[in-house]
Length: 158
Image (cartoon, rainbow, N blue to C red; front, side, top):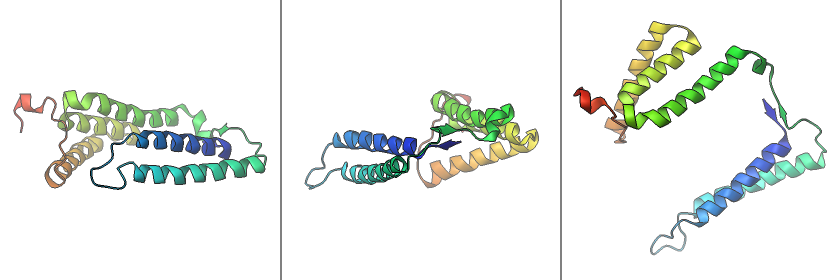
């Protein structure tokens, strides 16, 4: 998939404007001359400048391409479903992680995703379980980032 430079430039200009408006609403820090909105605003200004440059360059060159060009792989249903399965997995985690819990949901999601993409069910199961445990240990034990427990305390597993 390839987007026109006009579309990309306009997208980054709109994104920069949105970030500037959102970061303007941050409460200022006590005793500071600048607040928490400084870094996002500076980043958005650079993003807007780059988007403007891209848009103007494409406009001056009279770019006559379609706004979006789809690659050849978009015609193969299996490849489109593989890509959609990744987004579906992310959405399932987003909506079910608090309810089900990381240690139950993530091994299942990884197993399903790897089995779908690779086609090896048992290898996917081993990778899904080991990767989930590794991620859990890394975030919970080393980084001290709490992950959702969900149903795990009810089973008295940990």
